[in-house]
Image (cartoon, rainbow, N blue to C red; front, side, top):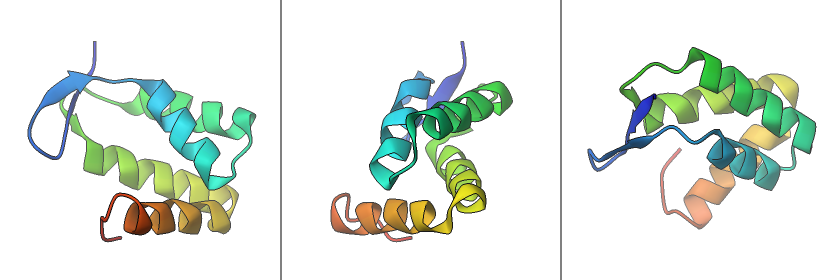
Length: 84
């Protein structure tokens, strides 16, 4: 099972559904959200960081619709108080 290293150093199991939920919040369709999560899951290796996952997801969303990437970044800034 692939383990993800969180920002605070904790490790947890990779959960593709988290990507699906986040992608849906950007405005992506359920099909696109599942496709992005599936592609990240296939490429993920044990010890992948949340930063790397975020970067990959943002790149994929931007390719499909640049507005989805912007929506993710706005959400991170407004709700999670994270810089882009």
